[in-house]
Length: 281
Length: 182
Image 1 (cartoon, rainbow over the protein chains, first blue to last red):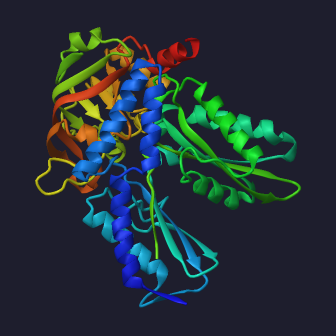
Image 2: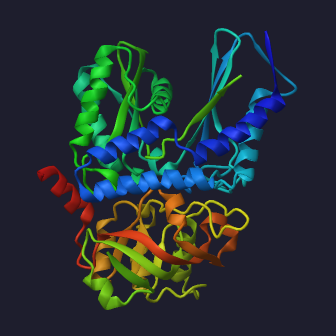
């Protein structure tokens, strides 16, 4: 049995929140460079070069990559042999997010009530937290701030089994067309297929933080990832939607068994600031 | 690359064409969703506005907080389409240019052509880079809105692309068409 102190979790979440907003992951930086080398539109190339420069300035000056430091999404993988002491895990994480956004000079964008008050909570809490109980004695926390330029363009559709593969492709194109320049392309697209409505959405969100350039272990889904990526990049949307070859950096798919009557598909659009970082206790 | 002084010369603004890459020196306003809503409602009620829109340019942006010794935090554009319902009214009241990211509605484009206005875009996600060209940030109105307050910023070599020119040419359409045909 591993024992982790709640105060330690708070301290680490503070650091993760700040770090995720200021530094893009290495695989994302490499994707920027690769796209810059391959882009044939001069304006698209210039935009990619500015995105590279932007991530370097953010890292060097330790300021946010993007002013929309997002709603903080947290994935927790809690080993069943881990015990949190000295406080409630949920509270420890929420406190870490609130402190991180305040101490790190990150933009506070969360309103207390979605429909009626819409009053800013002033500390960017609460975060959206997803828990998963796993084997062993590890506690992994992934912090993935999500801006709403791209989140607003994400979509979910309950397809019929008859619509099948073509239905998934059509929905993908329709979602990218609708996203256009508003979601700040080049994008990383996460797709969740199967399960129920909420399972598909969660799979899509998880897929969106999977490494750029990685493939689904199932060859059929890996092929679909490649096909959708080529399809997206043939649309001509390009960097910032102003034309070019690079509309997406990648398409990541995660899937789950589903009901005989259904084919849920969720598409989570991630902007060019693909932000996430993690720690394992 | 063309360098434009803001507030803009109306004639010079009208000579710009969609797809042009420019840099801006001078100063313009900053306002986003909540500020637009208040300005719009004030106009509807016939109240006096806290700022003068005549000949102005509005940048749709809500910055991250500035650290001590810094002018501003990260400062990239937000999605312009959310301001579309307010924009024709603001153009009627003297607004001449806008900076943001993303598509505009047909109503906005029509109104822009009528008033000879221009819509610029800058790079979404490049907030750290853009902040380097902002030399001063001063809140003018609606301070209670925090990151959404109306402010004036002073800029030096602020990088922009003409997305929709005063004739209604739209580079989102032109750039994409060019990319597909090549």
